[in-house]
Length: 201
Image (tube, rainbow, N blue to C red):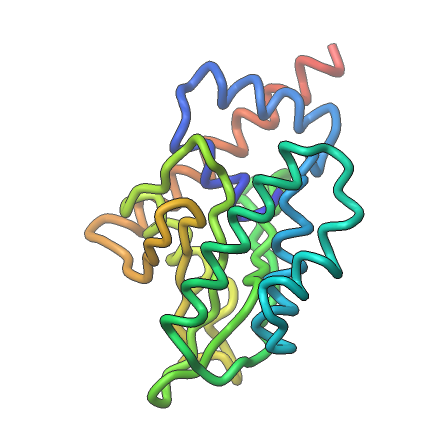
């Protein structure tokens, strides 16, 4: 399960969360049509593509109009943010975290990284148009990114999430974030195990 899909569970009601996890138990991976915007953003930052280039080279394979619009809107926010926050592009790290029972794996895969004033930060975009990212939930994401990726040559790196609707960047953890992150991982894993058990019954 991707980090953003995992964090979404803390932003929606419990019924929707249960339904999403039940679907995930049946079909792991889900259907993330934002992959195109993430791929385009990685190229936009890594290869210094313009917005028009990124859209034309990556979005052509998106067939549904609303998905194409959502991807383009997200990418435009990231492009505007890039122009306002110039820096040296770097290849971000990737990794995984596993829940205490070994049944939930959270994929940690920042889309781009920038070095500014000697500090390198890797960024994960929040792509949902209808669900706003809160500072507390983003803090859990930052904590998990640090826990899984802040090691070896990336020990001094920082991590952040960007809301592609508001353009707001979240790069801080908060008081009790460690406990909140552990609770979120454990609860999600328990719900996933329950959904798998129900499906097998």
